Image 1 (tube, one colour):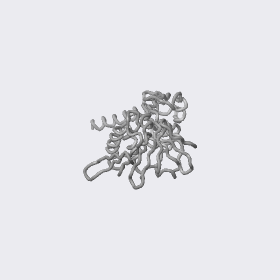
Image 2: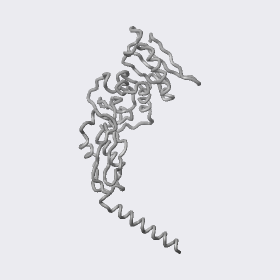
Image 3: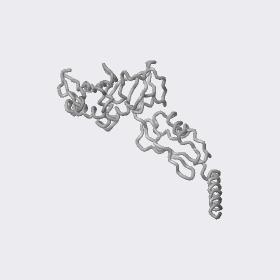
Image 4: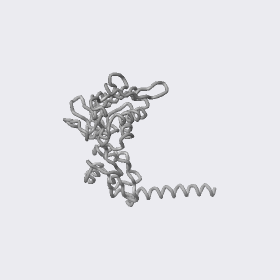
Length: 263
C-alpha cells in the first residue's frame, strides 16, 4: 500500500513538474542566431533576413517547437543554405548552425533554362544563360532530369545518390571545389550506352568510365591517377598534339585502365 501511494505521488509530482516547465515563460523562444561553420561567399551579411525567413514563432515553448519545420523554411527560402542543425541553448535561444552550399553541376532544363545545383542536387539558382568557364559549375549532359519542374530552393527528384557519390569521388582527387571545377569541363551520363560515363577535362583529355554505377569511387581514383600521369602540373597533355582518352573498365575480378593518346 505504501509503495502504491509513493507511485501515485511520483506521478503527480512529474505531471506538475512538466506542467510548470511547459507553461513557464522562461522556456519560451526569445532569440535566434546564425553561426556559419565555414566561410561564405553568397550568404554574407544575410543573417537577419535569413532568420526572418525561418518564420520562427517567438514565445513558443522550447520543448515543443518543430525544428524540422524551421529547417525546411530556412533551406527553402535560402537556396544556398545548408542547416547542419538547430542547437537549443536553454532557456530561450536557438542557434542555426549552417554552411554554405557549393555550386557543383549545371543541368539544362526543357525550357532552355539552366539549374545550378550542389552535389545533393539542390537547386541554388536558375539561369537564363550559362557560360562554361573554369570557375563555375560542371555542365551535365543527358542527365535525365530536364523535364522536372524546379525552382531555386527545390531538390531534383532522384532514383539514387549517384550525383553525390560522383562529386564526392571528384573531391577525393581534388579536395577543393574550385580545383574540381577548374579541371573538369563537363560530364555526360549514359554516353553511347547505359551506365557509361564520359568526363571531359579542360585539358582536352577524355575519361570514359564503363559501368559507372558500380564501384564508381574506385574507378575514378584509377582514372585520375592515369590522368595525373598524362598531364603536366598545369593540367596540359604531355603530348601537346593529342588529348587522348582514358578508358576505365572492369573484369570479374578487377578494375583496369587504358590510355590511348591518339584517341
